[in-house]
Structures are given as C-alpha cells and as structure tokens.
Image (cartoon, rainbow, N blue to C red):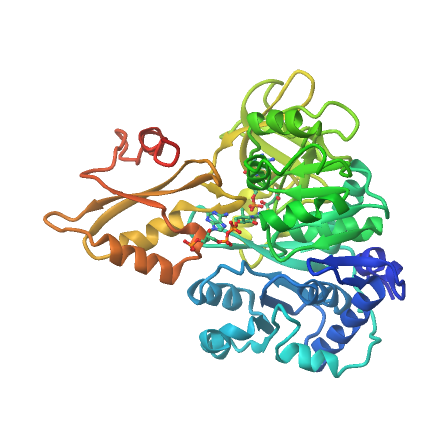
Length: 504
Ligand code: MLC
Ligand code: AMP
C-alpha cells in the first residue's frame, strides 16, 4: 500500500516520543501522541462513511486537534477542505454545497447557525472545538489507536482550497499529493530545515501558508513547532527565544518592528525569518535588518501553486524581490494578451509551471482552461519582471485583488453585495495602503437619484454576509464613478484619490 504524502510526512514519526507541537501553556504534543490521535480520527472518519476522495469541509479553530484532522484526512484518503474561521454562515453554505462535502466539521459554538447548511447539502455535521471538545472528538476518542493507511496515488487529490475570483465566485483549487509533497521537499532543501528546527507558528492553518508551507515543511524535516492559536504579539515576543525560525505575513513583521521589546537579543536564537503572501515593503526589510541583523527571506506563492520562488538562503536576499524559481519550478514573464514570453527586464504576467502547480479548479473546466495552459503553465495574474541578476520582482497585479494582512479580498464580491443595498445605484471597491494590513478596503458608493444611503444599514448587511476582514473600513458616497470613454470604471483614479485614507 502506498500513500506518498502520508508516507513522507507522517509515517516516519510514528511512535516517536519526540516533540512535535509546543503549546502556549508550555505543554508538548509528541509525534507519537499526535499520530495516535490521527489514527483515532481516521477511524472516526471511516465510521462516518468517509471514503477516499470524499471532501471533508472544516470550519474550526486552530488547535493540535485541527492539525491532526488534516493528517487524518491524508491517512484515510479524504480531501481536506479548510475554511477561513472568519467566514459567515452565508459564505460557508457556498463552499459546503459547491464541494459536495461528505462531512462538515464546525466549531461547537456555531452548530445551530450551520445546521441548515448541512440539511440542504446533505453533509454529515459534526463539531470539533479548540479545547479538543465536540462530537467528532467524542467519536474519535472511542476509536482504536491504529488505523490503515489508505492507498493513494501521487496525482490523487489531497486538498481542496477555495480562492476567490474576479467574478465574485470562489474557485476550489484541486491540490494533489504530489503538489504538496514536491513543494515541501523543495522548501526543506531551499531553506535548510532540519530536525533541530523549532518554527514559531502563529499563522492560521486554513491557508497554504500556515498549513502547507509551514506544517508540511516542518513535518518533512522532522522539526517541531511552537503552535500558537493566532498572532498575539505578547505571546510571540515571549516565545521567540525558544524558536529557530518564523514564517509570517508582512503584518507580523511590521507589528514586531512597532514594538520596542523586539530587539536583536530577542531574535538571537533565530536562524531564519521568512515572509510571504503579500508584498514586504523594502522599508520593512531594511528596518528589520537594522534592528536584528537578520535579512528577512521573502518568497512568493499562491493557493493554486504552493511556493514558486524564493530568495536564496545563502546568497543575497534582495529587498523588494521574491528571488528565484524554486528547483523544479519554471517561471516566465509573458505578454498579457498574446502570452508570448517577453524579453528580460520587461513587465508582464508571471506564468509558472512545475510539480507544484495544481490540477485545476473543482468542477470549473472553463476557468481551468482560462488560467492553466495546455503546456502546464499557470497564468498567475501577477505582474512581474525578472531583473538583470535573475531576481523576480512582483510589481503589481493584473487581477482586481486586495491583499489585507495576507488575506485575499476580491472587490467584486463586495460590490455585488453593495449594489443590492437600498438606495445604492452602483459601487466600486478598491484597496488603499494601510499601515498595519498593507492594504485595506475602501468602498465608493453612488446613490440612486434622490435617494440617501443608510451607511449603518449597509455596514450591518456587510457584517451579516461577509467575513470581517472584507468589510470596507471606509465608505465614501460620491455623485458618479470615474469612467473611461468605453464606460469602464477607472479604479486607478479612485485608488489615487483615496490613497491616503488610512495613512494621513
Ligand atoms: C483580522 N482582521 C482583519 C484581518 N485580520 N482585517 C483586515 N485584514 C486582516 N487580515 C479584523 C477582524 O475582522 C476584526 O475586525 C479585527 O481585525 C480583529 O480580529 P483578529 O483576528 O483579532 O485580528 P488579528 O489577530 O489582528 O489578525 C491580523 C493578522 C491575521 C494579520 C494577524 O489576519 C493573520 O494571521 N493573517 C494571516 C493571513 C494568512 O495566513 N495568509 C496566507 C494566505 S496563503 P472586526 O471589526 O470584525 O472586529 C497565500 C499564499 C502564499 O496567500 O503565498 O502564502
Ligand atoms: P492566494 O490566492 O491567497 O494564495 O494569494 C496569492 C497571491 O498573493 C499571489 O497571486 C500574489 O498576488 C500574492 N503574493 C504572495 N506572496 C507574495 C509576495 N511575496 N509578494 C507579493 N505578492 C505576493
């Protein structure tokens, strides 16, 4: 029997009393403890009738149990589908329905709110709480602590991760065992992870960054993680002296720099700080080096592709760049319309090919054809250039996307909601520079003739429908949206106009 991902990441640690997760309260979960729970959970999945290929949708808080569930899905061949904990029931219903999830695991506190979703979609509903509570945990604890490893092939799906789209409709990126494993192998090598590493893990585990880049890499290397529920500055500062590495979004680094307790001495034991998911300002890179002597290593990736490029571990880590293609990964800069490869130094759309690139979008063959070329190159939608020394620079986005604190927000989704609010004729949503989140959301509304818009009612409607990080922090009412002669809304003009709303 073979299951490449389980065999490489988890099986080697079976029975080992070595530390895997160190928790904020000082307790430790060993590899052996963790894998025993994984077996029990895999048996619980089996008891619920989950078979290889079934989707398991999870909307649960970060905890060792939540991570064990990911491993249990890999072990039993189920497709892990993690969902942002900030999503509202309205958002969740789409994912559970679209994925046709067999099992939907939610937090015990939201059982009532999501019962209807399970009823309508036919998903089995269970709960799993951050304290190891919930009905799924009760079921798992009653199971034997050994389970079979389901047979899987390299091209079988391991995870389905939804990413929003420019049309406002989220797309499920199908990630195979080989996608995840090849990337973990590349990263262990590129960043020189070993079993002596202790990763300070304060990222969420429902996205590529915290789940695959951090966890898979550490599992493959045999290291351990200081596993925190979220990025809490005091806790991160308290525990950093025990860590050797940290992975974070740029907001982690700006928050650390804003605190005088963050010193070179505090970072003395660290060998590597890695940043990604959003652009790290060159200014942050420089300040960080001045404060700590460490040069942050910036890398670039996507849900659909895992990690594509990285600054070098031993060579020059260049501020404002995302380094070179990882081994086995090809990147090229292409003309946005023709797709032709552009000469070195020119700005175009970055395309990527390699074992890291996903299989396509779940049940969306047309979208897949639009973005994934027949020759295997994926059109990222990011605008980039390759400098004279071969470093890739991400210079902008061809897609209408806002990245706030590392979370992607597609304006279309918010505009669709705003346009249906009473008194609103039309809307445009843009990102503006934000000192903490890098970018944050601004909505511009045009009222219907003679109508007044009730901004409080709009705010309430947004809170009910959308995750908090998508909520416009500023709403402006204007007479008309700027349009070009073709009638297209000039978002660049709006971005210029509102560039200072969060910073002035
Ligand atoms: C939380 N809030 C945000 C936010 N996160 N608002 C805007 N942008 C964000 N990113 C809001 C909440 O809605 C709430 O507002 C208030 O802030 C407090 O919530 P919180 O959860 O206590 O916030 P905080 O702990 O400060 O979280 C900020 C953060 C977090 C930056 C630590 O967002 C985070 O961990 N981001 C990491 C995202 C990530 O992992 N991305 C990887 C994607 S993978 P209110 O008003 O509702 O109370 C990917 C591929 C790749 O992109 O290359 O890696
Ligand atoms: P997601 O769809 O959530 O996986 O987000 C992927 C997007 O995040 C990419 O397409 C980029 O736009 C952006 N991104 C990730 N890493 C970086 C980086 N280091 N610099 C700039 N943008 C980044």
